[in-house]
Length: 249
Image (cartoon, rainbow, N blue to C red; front, side, top):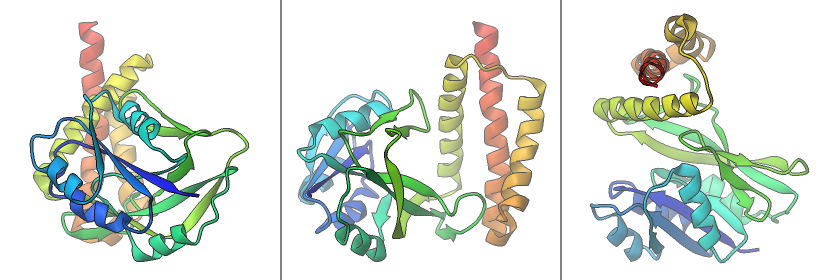
């Protein structure tokens, strides 16, 4: 069976070429759903053989599902612009006999400011990325989109790594924290959750302890400490924003 890769983009000129090159010989077509990038993302994607469809940003799930609907093949390889298939993962995908009763999960290895993070609750990081669009679809309104699977579908884990060049520098990390805090707060508000004292102050402490000690963030050195502290701040920040939303409403 043939596979279509689907990527959603917005100003990814620093990453997109690396991602697209890793897909050569793995997929039959590459669909890029671009939210009107203002940099060279579209030009680079076109030069690397991708089909470009520009669409206003409606959310992670919505834009990904739209991309899936535009693919000519039923089997979708969902990959982000800042991700790259490792050679071992490429071999695993090529050897597959795709089974409609299964979906396939990739183990993502995250790069933080030039360092590969192997602990800190960032690894192992299994994500379903290869599936039949007739059986599965993305769900979630704001952040943390999930693939909705029929009960009869099993998850197979493939050998090899999905390299994720997630954070270029410290400033990039802070910007992402604010972005995800905003989106998470919106999701919590929509779901009717409350910003209690425990959520505001004790949950961040619990997140730090989990990341740094239980998930062995200390083994990642200085980066592990930074990730653990900022993970705790992200938890506090999203509930702080949720509290403001509740006050306004």
